[in-house]
Image (cartoon, rainbow, N blue to C red):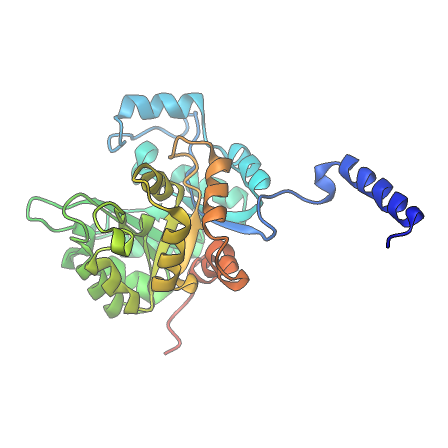
Length: 327
């Protein structure tokens, strides 16, 4: 039985602890630090960083208005990162505001080295892209490049064609990541080719944005993953980004998030999965959706949780590239 003086002492201690400012204990939603692999930055200074929003999802006028009213500057994003417990993250070039002009991203990454690690967007088929990647890796410490978009009139995704192999070869040489977001078409239309290129360029950390948009209601038995998705699991250098944008889609499709997350980890491995907030793009309560991601992972082991939310990302995204394949 607890002695009365011990009970009183403990009670007073509890009251004292409760009255302390939160900063004494640190901030964050999880008991471990997070790495955000999907943060978008943009500013409301068009004279210095002109908008090129022709590819914006909801049209250029709305995107520019959004950026002018609510710029995603480092100060804004860092405030969210601190609240969520995010130590650092990737600055993913936002095509909806600047298309392939990476100037703002590279400038803020240079101003915050180690805090913002840049992932640029370039034209995969342009003749100068391989040399641009090499220069950016050396001078700007990029960790990779993002290729995205739909198929052309022939049904081919330009960044997966032979015309893009120079860019793939340079990323393979430097140990850069290539993040892919194929859009449109039948589910999994681009994925067999992704597997071919990943196998060919084994020193490229291939990242499938939003895990390739699985749709639960189409294939509930595999939580939306197609045979093409599942076939990629055997390729060691393909990795899977679990994002707020995907979680939005899954929730709207009545997907059981916890079961989805556990199935994805069991299928692809936590050491091949990363998490990203999609701040600057998804129009949601950002902290709420960080919590959704954390809650969905509560059934994983501690090692798996750390891998999904931090450890895997630190291995994949090295400023300047991971270097040549030791093999």
